[in-house]
Image 1 (spheres, rainbow, N blue to C red):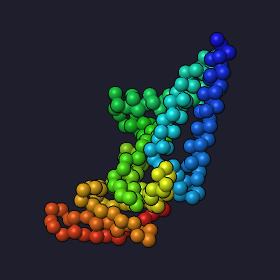
Image 2: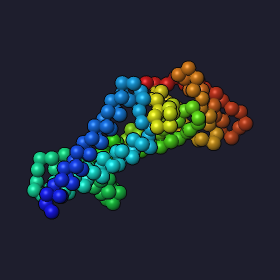
Image 3: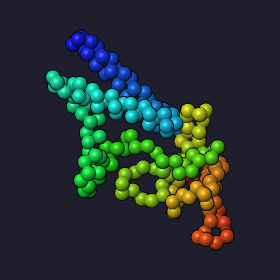
Image 4: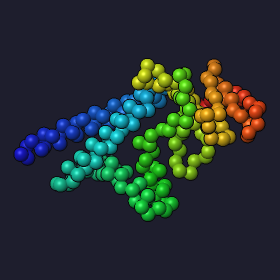
Length: 189
């Protein structure tokens, strides 16, 4: 029975590090080329990575091995945000923000056939209205185009965005008036 458990544990460790390598490869390709897996597939792989890391932490804690320290990161990254929601406090908020950064899902603020605009997660004390603009490619990939900083939150019902020559044409209504305003915004890389 012990031999079977060790074999399962070894396979889980192997798949955990294959998945970690795949996620790091995706990050490297995005860094150098701008192309990456779409956000939904990436978060799915990251959640499996964190789940396998948590399981492996509990499987490797007895007898204690050095690799348990690595796997403890996955468990701590689940416990600290839970404590923050229960107890509150600025210290736990900062720790939660740092630990959740790698797996925090991007929120879609605006989507059309040609572009998707995600809210840019920069921690709990970040400035308002910073977004990431991507272009969907072949259903499972997307290409990073740039970052967009505007002065107000996006309202998908009233705002309109179009990509034209690496610039965003941003059309919005001023207050409750009938008048539309159009801005051309250069994207930051």
